[in-house]
Length: 211
Image 1 (tube, rainbow, N blue to C red):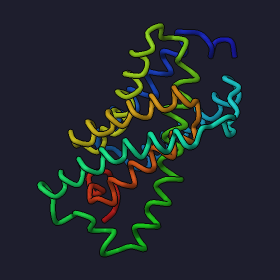
Image 2 (cartoon, rainbow, N blue to C red):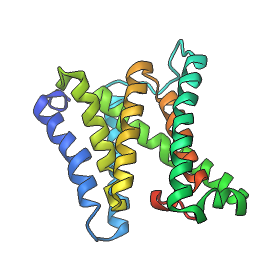
Image 3 (cartoon, one colour):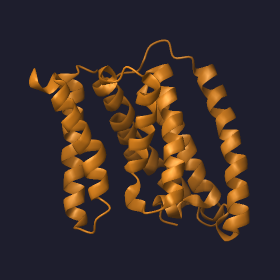
């Protein structure tokens, strides 16, 4: 247990989880191997959070829901304006395509995405990352920047430059939210709102949503 708290162990762990595995997933090898690695990695992360870092996955106290939703909706408004314009000018055929043509599928996919994709991502990239590596960085701006970088690296397998840019920017937003709130729930809600919007507006194909 003591070894798992050492700087050398944490740095090695960081490299494997946030650099080696995401980069390796760009390579063409069995999806079943990738899935197995992902499951084992996720179980390891949960183990470390609960048993090593003594993190309790419970609702944070004193959450200011009004300020959170106000800030999130303001950011969403900016995202809406930019993305609607982008899809309208560069991919007009997909503008609100799934919402209009397949509303039931739209609802089901947003639910599955929010529960089975967004929440695990936030456990890994915010709760685990902040709990595990905060002590390794004196410069907290660098700490947040690296969080956004590794979050974007996790999306390398899409092999799409725009996805890398979007996830880097999203990673910055989520990192700042988690730093401020210390709430996995709030950052999960924010992540889900923005991700669901991208699918809704017509950018789902590049993010792996079936259309």
